[in-house]
Every structure is written in structure tokens, then in C-alpha cells.
Length: 176
Image (cartoon, rainbow, N blue to C red):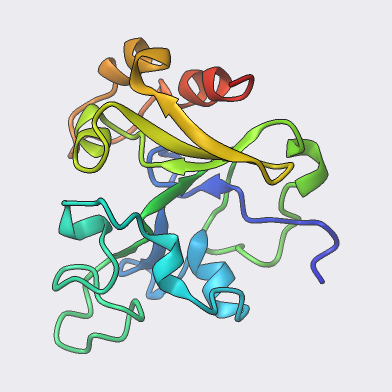
């Protein structure tokens, strides 16, 4: 339907912003929200890890309502998915949907989705010893934290901006 284009990316030039559904700043759907807007999230709970303990990344929690952007009481609430997509390209909110996205065939043997890896805390709030990873060919499995722990430990705390270690983590996940 989309000429093999998929919204594998991140927003605001910060690679750890690769799990958002709704931007309260721009009042629009972003990254995973583009799938929701296109009607491709028929079972949205499947986009959230049932082992998650952080309400920011849980399905329909008090601070992450579903559907995103519809809570009415707090229109400034960002919406997040429970998984992260490969931060391949910067998908600017202003042009999302108006520029070509990466082609899925390019990622056939590469990791495209995983549990959150923006910081060590994100891994610790669900599985601690590893993460689930999905590759472009459709295969998925768990990957031990020790495999990518060195760059993960270099990631900034949750409230910092740019995370330069994300590319390193994803390159480590690729051959797993």
C-alpha cells in the first residue's frame, strides 16, 4: 500500500525519540502514530510490552492514554509506543507523510523494532537481562543485555537530549 515505505526513524534529531505516537508539541501523530493514523494498528495493545513497569511506555496508562492525543484533560501529553523502531532517518513532524520513508526491503536482515534502548533504565523497566528484537525478514527473538550493554551504559539519563549510542546498539542487534 505504501510502495514498501515504512516510518523507521526518529523525531527532533534525537535518536531516542523513536517510540512516539503523538507529539503534544506539534499536536499530531508521529513515528508509530503514522501507522495508527493509517489504520494499521488494529490491535494497539500489541505495540506494548506486557512486562513494562514504566507507565510512560504502557498501553493506556494514566500518563500514556489510548488513543493518544485524545485524553482532553491534558492536551500537552505526549503519547508513546511500548517499543522502539530503528532510528534510521529523522522524520520531521512538519513533513511526515510528504517525503519518502525508508524502504522495508533495505532492512530484510536488519533489526527494525525492539524493546526500548534509549537508556539503561528503559531496559530495566521490563526485562532487565535483555530485550525482544524483530528483524525485517519477520524473525524475532530475545537478545541478552550483555550483547549491547557497553553502548547502552553510555546512554544519557532519561531527560537528556541526543543519544549518540543508538546507532551502535542497533548495529550490534543486526547480526544477532
